[in-house]
Image (cartoon, rainbow, N blue to C red):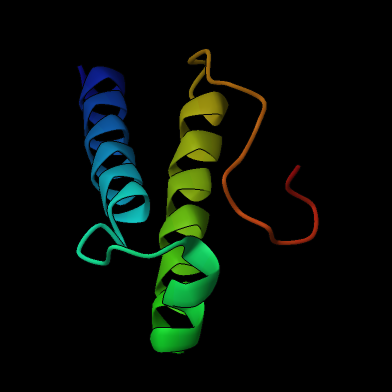
Length: 79
């Protein structure tokens, strides 16, 4: 019971972080490079969301769940 609750929670948090990551610049009608120039702090926010997503994917892997090997974060150690 506790394991399934943890899996549910980690999946929920990973889903939220992924949605925030993918929709970070949806309100702009320009490309990602121009968005980075217009709002440089958003790039850090995007990377933070990617790192959180990767963290929860690693937690799920530790619980024995099958997760993709690829990660969103550009942090060293993640591919």
